[in-house]
Length: 258
Image 1 (cartoon, one colour):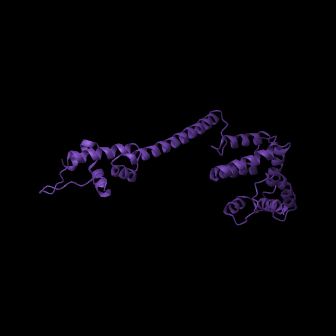
Image 2 (cartoon, helix red, strand yellow):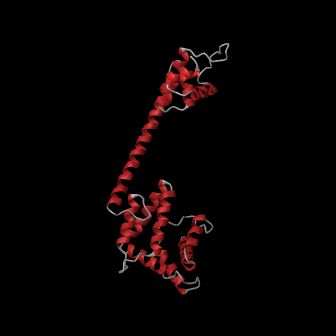
Image 3 (cartoon, rainbow, N blue to C red):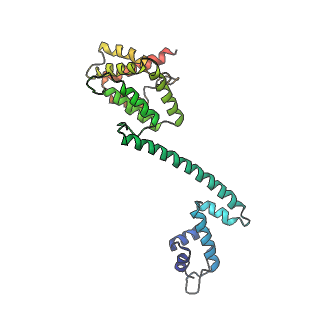
């Protein structure tokens, strides 16, 4: 058989056959006097086995190990590892589908936050805080909106352990009597400073109030790194007086532990 005939018989392309030759998976046959390769039934058998193994999900390096093991022990080990990996993938897919189902339900019910999709826990926290908004006009606090965006960003970029710690920290703050109202008061104080200067006396007042609204454990034990890229970006998005309030409040929290 020529290479095209071999490839067609097994259901691959001639390019794939050449690639397997290059990797040493499929021995190259001797060439006829006219220069063409002369493939035998044995080549077709090996090529078909390579195809079956790759369709099971084995990588080509694993296929090489399997082909090198005449007694099949390597194949048993590789297939067991592949089965475990597929089980992990199935579990991950089920978890993603469950998350997708919850997001679809929230979207259909009009409960998906503007920052979404976020976790069900964070979405519930957003609804709880928003539901206690003191604004009679229904106008949302710009600082509250920014706070939600920051929380959604942290949840996306943090490790699972950090996300759990963050949610627990905010939950413990809002669950205490007056916790949600205190958060809204902090948002209002910050909103009032949007056009103020950093020397405005309200800056110190707002900073001291904000200390009591910052969730316990949110500020690292090591203190605040003012040069952290996240903090720099946060300060840049705030008005100067607002950034100063947050900066002072974080310092007060850190200093209060000393």
